Length: 270
Image (cartoon, rainbow, N blue to C red; front, side, top):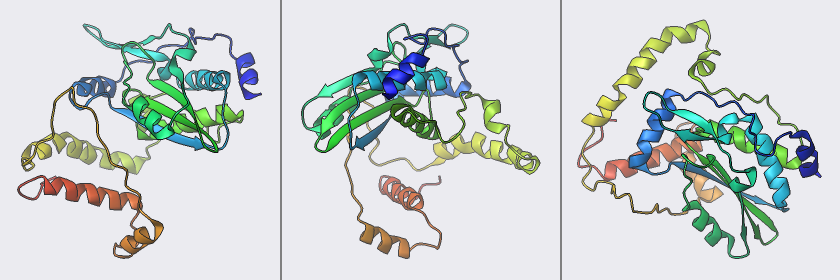
């Protein structure tokens, strides 16, 4: 079994020997923004044709935490500097079994259950049964990973679950210099301009039109959403009206722009 093979390779059940990663400036900014925007969690729902035991899920998570050490730590604020501190709780504290019930209702209930990043690991796995297989809900805090990060973690976690090697090398570093070390010489020529544009972005936001219907900032309010299914035929018809090479992501960005414009009295300057 994949779980027993992984468990044999792991020396410590709690990853106690993991070296805490240094806190990045982006970590501080995201943590401060959570007071305004909520927990900022990223959820991935995986519907599978087979199920996994709790031991298999814990072993896979254990291995994934070793690959990405930040996932084994909690965020701790300090007077001079914040830091990532090890979590003493066993790895099983980050794995839950939702039991029997409607998988969509169970998923919604767990999505609404926050993770305390100052106490718990910024990752959680919830397993539940569904007709024809199982569902795994993977929750990752944006404080620890970005959009590309959840893709990497999800891929590695799945590889560990099935007992195979990840298809790409694993990069545990998450610092700024790691992000820019792949730049070529001609990228550096454009970097000052890009930095200037990013630095001016708050000014563009401040100059944008005021919304007629501001978004609520009540911390007690729960997140709401709507599932929209776009059929293949309709999507093909919409893309036919777009410029050649336009992607689904381009379409979604355009939709969000129209929604934002509908909430403002005049065209946004962003």
